[in-house]
Image 1 (cartoon, rainbow, N blue to C red):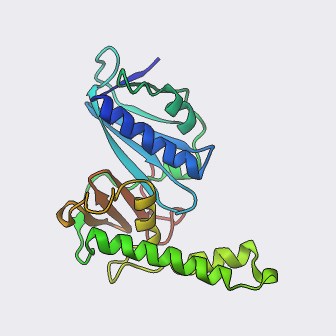
Image 2 (cartoon, rainbow, N blue to C red):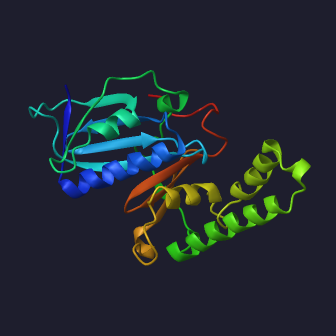
Length: 227
């Protein structure tokens, strides 16, 4: 049994909250865990947003017996959440599952360079709110016979595929960051705490609470980093 010793109760609570948000969008969600030393990276893919969500979790020590080994496994997010003991600051790694295709396609570890043009947090939140409002108004205006899943998806793709200024970052990535709690509440994240980075075809929105990574051309395209 592999036990993760999280840095403290607060870290355990934040970890549990992230897993809960992923499960809100996909009850069968899986997460890929990669840990070395006292750092744990948790990768998830909320299907509504077509992005990779990355949550860094601080560990008090690598594993139960202090074994200095690498952990790299894909597990059920639900089973992992059930094992989190916030009071004790621990989580038990469940049995591995056959990972979904995205779990074998991760952003590169290095080579990230900063990209200009990312607006302030409040501007990003306003952008998401405007997009949500537009989606709601446009779908409500549809005649009943046109309010099909295909038409709703088409409108959604049109809105959420728009980019944030000239950055190339799709608005859906910002929406994912807000929905997963990475943007915090208004005023909680300063402009200097956000960053946009690129590496190859990947873009990464970094916040104090986690990152959203998206590959231009989609996660299924050729040329991605497979591990």
